[in-house]
Image 1 (cartoon, helix red, strand yellow):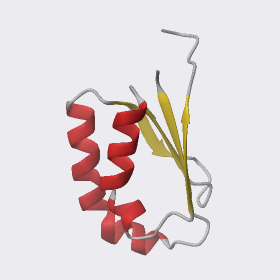
Image 2 (tube, rainbow, N blue to C red):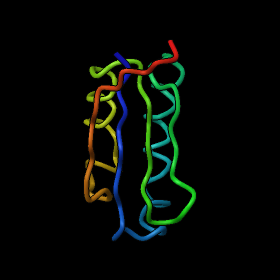
Image 3 (cartoon, helix red, strand yellow):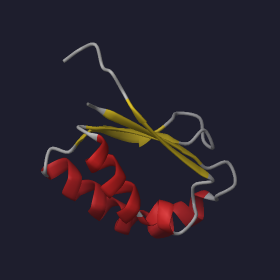
Image 4 (cartoon, rainbow, N blue to C red):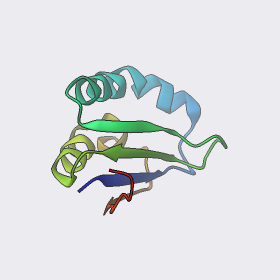
Length: 88
């Protein structure tokens, strides 16, 4: 079952995110190349956080555990939800 990850980050500065971004991008690229992430990115309004869609919960859990943004506390909250996508 597809899994959605929602990230909240109202307090982190863009400068801090950009400092960590290359390491985050390396993890993201690995998951995209492996076909484990279907979509990922920040919401349009700065401070609104980000979202990612994974092929399954195992991939989402693995990504979050390895993501430097999460490991270094840039997100104030990470929510992982299994998603019953109606478009298969």
